[in-house]
Length: 344
Image 1 (cartoon, rainbow, N blue to C red):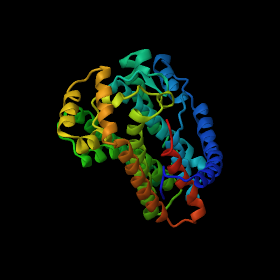
Image 2: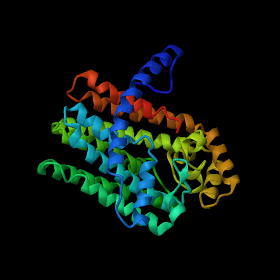
Image 3: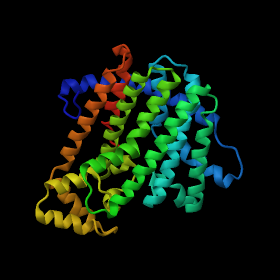
Image 4: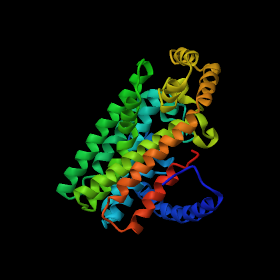
């Protein structure tokens, strides 16, 4: 299945499919929104819990809890049993965003001021920790064996995410970062959370081991493609819709796939210029201009989109291995293509 290379007739077919899929997605988003409203924090002190409500209320697409629900549905599970674990994933995801924003000194998240910008770093750390601990409590209603399996996956995912974040930090000062290093980092930072969301939903529905691992691998590769798209949009996206500072990864010396591909295809002089700019952590607009110029000359935008397509295709191949009627798999293929066609 190819993406980004439509003829006009295929575009029309996609639009009809997208309308159907958006209605499908809206149903899940409403379930998640209703659950979030039901479990709004009313605890004290307000200085801790109001920031937690603040970031949760921003919404976004709430993709990861939807993945839990979709996988549970795919394997014939009871959605009521999956709602609280789905919220656990959403709370955990937002915990990582709060701490990520602190580390990156990011002023915006979803086009709104970040928590540490509004309330300070101490509140940001505490409210993030609070969300993570609340997330664990949302698994408590599961039957014992499923509870143990889900908590094992959830905890392992959290540890991998921390490892991925540390690799990302290391890369800012590490001179030699390989393509395999980068893929491992984004797999841990982004891919495994999507993968585990699908797997937890499958386990709640009592799917067999083989199918649960297939949906895990589908999610992993879609998550990898999603992060590469995030790197791409950081430089080449519509910043008004993206909701983040333009070229923030360049300012922060993030060795993204764009940087790695640019180094591979750059001239000797261009590599020297990249080394110069990535040795400085500065808001100098000349840095962004200079790096973007090299990115465009080496056509890393096109190369990144092809890599996104590759991981989408790998993910779809795992989806095809699941022993479920094809009609039930279609929303998962549409979800992947919807995510990878995004502008923000």
